[in-house]
Length: 243
Image (tube, rainbow, N blue to C red):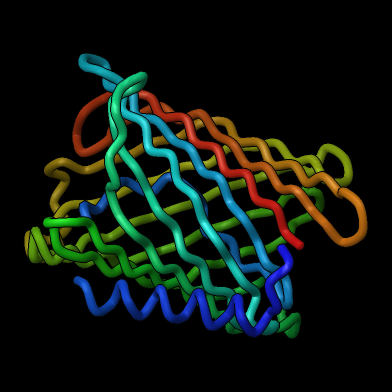
């Protein structure tokens, strides 16, 4: 973590622009986007999620990421994603450039952000996802609701994605609740239910403080439902170290 903040910003932006110049298979949503301020913090991330169909072999998606809180409004993130059968050989699935702009700064009792993600998958075109991310606290509950539009150049269509989560604060740093994801069919077909996806299940969130200003964050969920019209189960995990 010894690189300077300005060098880290230049690296993230340069790599992100390289993605845009290159041209993803649009995978189901598996992490709830949260509008939070990461100002001045550099983050390293390990993400891991699986899809276990009712019939067939379990697929895994490990991901590695780098994020930077450019200022109090803007956080940018790069992610490399791999895919493969459980216990088998993995191959690069996509490069992803995410950005989150905070549209509120404490003047309301909710937080609102604008999420964008540009993804490139070798030989399969690109995808663009964008939309609002909303969060509020109600007593000991933290509530999230997101609505994203996803354009895929390979399919040449736009689909609607929904994310939601409710977490109850058990004690400082620990929250337990439930979350869910939905993807509707192509926009041009009136958001048909063909190959639609709906998943819901228990979720856990924890924050651990280390030496100095280091922080380790953990989010995990176990989901049951449909993925592209097929019944199955999904496990997701996100581990982030901020400094």
